[in-house]
Image 1 (cartoon, rainbow, N blue to C red):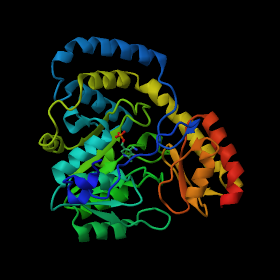
Image 2 (cartoon, protein in one colour):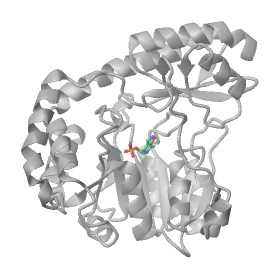
Image 3 (cartoon, rainbow, N blue to C red):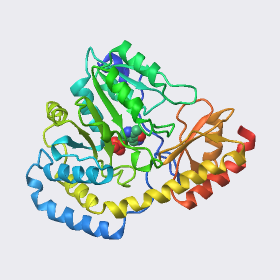
Image 4 (cartoon, protein in one colour):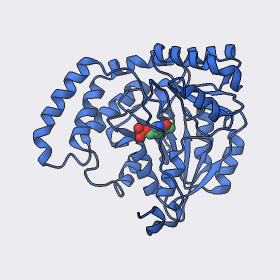
Length: 365
Ligand code: PMP
């Protein structure tokens, strides 16, 4: 049998393993930060119609510029942030992972450097490697917050071409304040990407970096429909930035990357925004319930603005992960000593998680 080692792989890919949480058949899958609520029936009915309407046109390529979808996304951003966002400022792709990849293809690449404040979304360094961009780990304090002075100094020293800030951060959950983001923007000559995949779950008083876009042409805000919209299977991510950034990304995007079916389905979902986002408050309530229950079990958590909670501390996080899995509860071992991450979902999921955790906590603290 041929192995990867036998192939003429790029040297930087040798010895690597593909990214991906285990997709195990368990009763309670709380490991990938999906929204567990079923899609509203009126949306399902409209989706069936929209896809049926798009199907006869599948002999043709889709709208390469996704014009109508970008207008709908701009309307959503304007309405929810209060910041006027024009369609020319918006770009969409197959999940925000593809958006991030296009940004690295455009602004990173061979001889260039990306920096992100680890622990953070582990795809940032992986997509950097895939685009031959050198990766530098940025510094966080022991409580996982970013020290703006030290972070800005590090960004300056590295002269990073692409800087990632995940806000709310994954896997820790905490949002980054706008002063820190503005300071990092000023510190870099490159592009600052604020990954806001979880922003709809933020606690009150946590404004989006969209409010910083005016006058900052190297700032990019990336978003997704995978989390709050509950449409992870759709694969729709997008960015908002200066129109020049959108023009720049055109240099690397594959022609017709976003299928007509994806565009039609995403537009239909956006027409049901209010019904889809109605689950956000319910998920936040479950997140806060998890946070509130942890001290009673002798455990703690990191402040969360997301639909997940980083909880601990465990003597051996992997052993605790296994003990929960033995009780049919799958959480995420993000490789942080002492900590595990759980996705907040339905009240029943919280019940199952807290029951299982209650059984194992004393043995694993
Ligand atoms: N950014 C962050 C911080 C994430 O956690 C995720 C998904 N886990 C993504 C981006 C990618 O999401 P998608 O490609 O589904 O939009």
